[in-house]
Amino acid sequence: MTEAHLDPARKHDFVFLIEATDSNPNGDPDNGGLPRTDPTTGQGLITDVAIKRKLRNTVDLLNTVEKKSGYDIYVDAGVALNAQHERAYQDAAVTDRHTAQQWMCKTFFDVRMFGAVMSTGKRDKQAGRVQGPVQIGFSRSIDPVVPLDIGITRVTPTRQEDVDAWNNTQTDNDKDTNRGKETEMGSKHLIPYGLYKGTGHFSAPLAQKTGVTSTDLEIFWRALTLMFEHDRAAARAGLALRGLYVFSHDDAFGRTPAHTLFDRITVAPWATPQRAGSPTTSRTLRSATRTCPAASP
Image 1 (cartoon, rainbow, N blue to C red):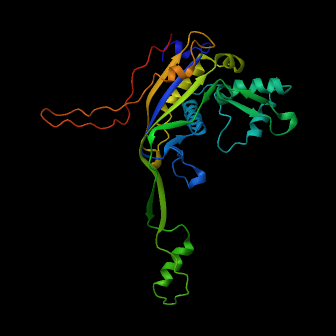
Image 2 (cartoon, helix red, strand yellow):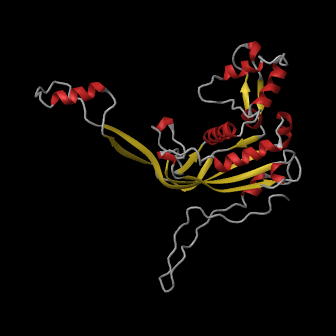
Image 3 (tube, one colour):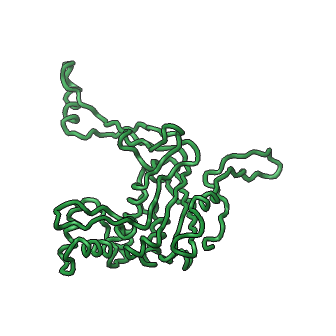
């Protein structure tokens, strides 16, 4: 990243490409965990919440190794949000909701960058609402995807009762006896392939309100490029960031609408290199991108 990309006094718009190979980029809990899709077009979807969760986890991981004050995570697993608000009021300098909000922005990276609604809990322990300068939309696959539900078998069941019942029924011919089970069935959800395009925005005026620094932007871009590298699992082994294109304007409000910049990032077929003398064939490249203009106007 250049100095321009790290300047919180500039407006930044960005496009990122996520490749999913034999993976589940974002499971839908309302559909049994299958990859999210648009029922109208068949295109795959990744929610903004899923992306920000990975960013939060990566920043937290970075801060575990490279410890810095001000990089705690507000939306953290196993920690109640109201308890986070109450932390602010333990500081003697916090006397009201306004100073509590300032403390939250200073302490939590994700409040400073993404914003938060902190108007829950005890009325005298709230911190109001912060509109974050970084906003990320849904990512959508370039082409339709095919969600697969793959059955798997485990060699042992979960409950001891099933093991005991299975062993007992090997010598018991009573058909009414609970026969238990020897194995356990399960499933994995994935798509064979998908290339997703996502977009995001950084507002300099809002960043000034929350106190974003150039170090915050440096960590944000770093987390965005690393967010899949330390989040591997069987269903996420084939996720990769295939492209990141940042448009940094030369002022706080921007010189051109974001959508006109995003239109300059295109994905197109790419011919497979051929051996000499072989018939000409082509296929669709999984992650082909085109060049974009300079990041700083």
